[in-house]
Length: 117
Length: 116
Image 1 (tube, each protein chain N blue to C red):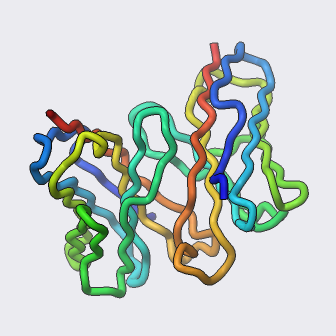
Image 2: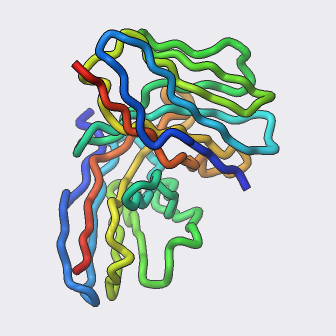
Image 3: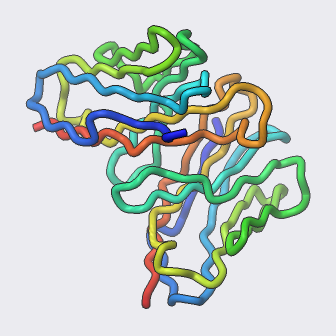
């Protein structure tokens, strides 16, 4: 168990460019979450996957954002036509299937820090 | 809508002393989970402690314990014998029981400084 990993850890881009982030959850975890954390705030929920199905999207996830989890393993979060307001830490978390002592716990990755110039 | 409030943006504690971080929440649900997560600088968030709302007994994990007051909707974290490694951002989180996603609602965090 190597934990949740995210790539890249840091991304600097110019306004208007597209960016894509990757999240690799803990291998047996079929539930995956994306959160956004801006400076001075707690993480805010963006979207949730169970296996490959995207079951919930926050209103924070505008049309410029798209997330996928094509084979129920890793997930990608793409932001098109980035804006300065998109600058934030993007966190990925995963959770195990039903049962087990850690069922209710989300395990977080280190995050991708996005800076839009 | 459920909300989580952490009213202390920053707290300081002397090494080996005890500190309490506050968290209040608002919900109309009766069954839910509450969590405290620690986020060290430039490192990932890790779970410190969790509390099931249906349990009256306060959760304890080594030097960390909670004071869960369900009627008051209060969930404070007590750190005993503070260590330099406890310095971090601490987030209180509520798990929405009515959402099948089990998504978290976080507070704004408390930055804990530990003084040597």
